[in-house]
Image 1 (cartoon, rainbow, N blue to C red):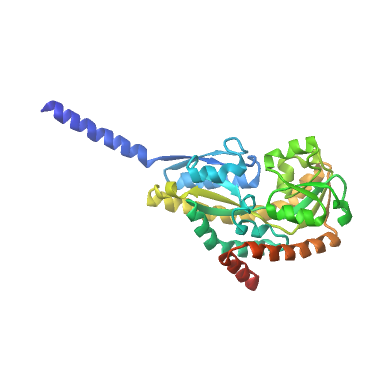
Image 2: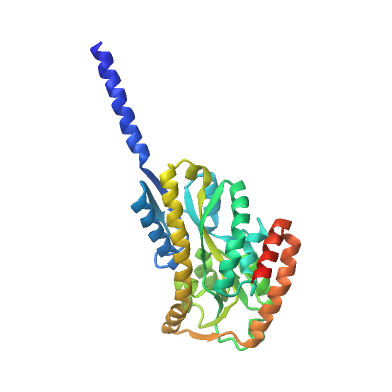
Length: 324
């Protein structure tokens, strides 16, 4: 009888210990950018907010150290990691909606980009949900520009140049501007310069700093034009396994992180262009000829986008255009 009581007591203690351990969750998060990138800095603040308001701790593995950026979405889908940061423009071949914000001059200011983001949310909730994913928040890149060997005075300076871009939308834009455009992951940019695969970039000031673009280019020409987005995504089944209190804490931290991301992005552009100049780069706004051509290209690309997109996606675009 004593043995039975001791056994029962031990079982109760073990269950209590197990319940205590289960109450604390530990997640690993993958992202593709360096620690001083504002996207990564914002993620760290998101993680701190989650830890301060719940029993969930998140270990961030940044700068492609755990999973390469372009593979993070699949890794989260498969449950290799519960949470990760993705760049939507990478997945244009999966769904044209992923690159809508990447069409030049479709949403060329932060206000327009925010409106488009809000109108896209329901669509993304459905499509990502079907893939077992949930978007926690969106984070915009600053406006884009051209990194070249020499200052840009007009469209002729683009003819035949080998350009690295980051999405199917920007690849098409680059080709229509006269470049030989190639999609390459962020991490492969330095090697591509060293092997001669590329000689120019179209990307944000932030990316130029991240890869020290002044080592391979000497001029930055700011065009604005595109405010593409990253998204922090979570495996939906893993999120659903959290307690209701922890889920609420994560969602509250994500809401704060999204607003902070847009504020951080908007405040960085001028300072980052200054950093490019401090490192010896010539900086200037794009000449009117280039901007006019990009507006024209944006309109043509929007027409092509409609031919590829679903009726539901087209309805989102039409609503956005009516409200813009």
